[in-house]
Length: 258
Image (tube, rainbow, N blue to C red; front, side, top):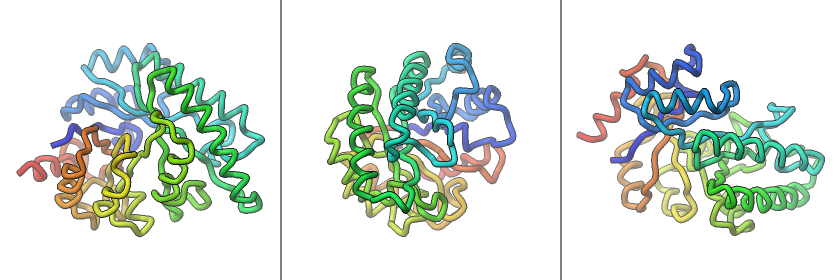
């Protein structure tokens, strides 16, 4: 079975970030995801990870001065901010030894021509992929479902794959999220075969509700069977909002191994 990562940004919502790492460690997690770790100084986060015997495997780039737009990649006016965000993230990632960076694309103003947004996105991510290559970091992009994030530029996994192929850089990969996939009306197990060669990381949450596996409609045994058959060899991030308190919200892991 895969090694699971605790996404401490979505888990344990009522607990401060600096205490979440220890709680995740007590639940057996050696790998951690943090969406936006910047409230902690990199040296402090590194010290906490080391104390818990953990590694940070995924983080997000800062969203910039208008976080509600969910990214900076599609607006020509934000090109400078996009570069500053990526540079800041890569600097932080180097200090905490994180090798994967999710860079959100942003929402697309319906008044902006789609082809103009695509051209700006491709220019930005071609540059970002080159910076990530120099830093030894993998960039990840993700399709966010239109119900949760109306107007998000990457509307589907097929959109993401098309963009990845446009940039055509080995450092640009797909963040495959079961929740967003299912919320977009796509079977998350069936879709794996279409995109496995481009997947850089997998995140899981049940659908609907974005809670732990077993709370929604996804057939998890089938999904993990398909994932194993696909040859995916990376980690799997638990990016859900737990309904049960820890450690009970991770009981499904033992069931999958039965």
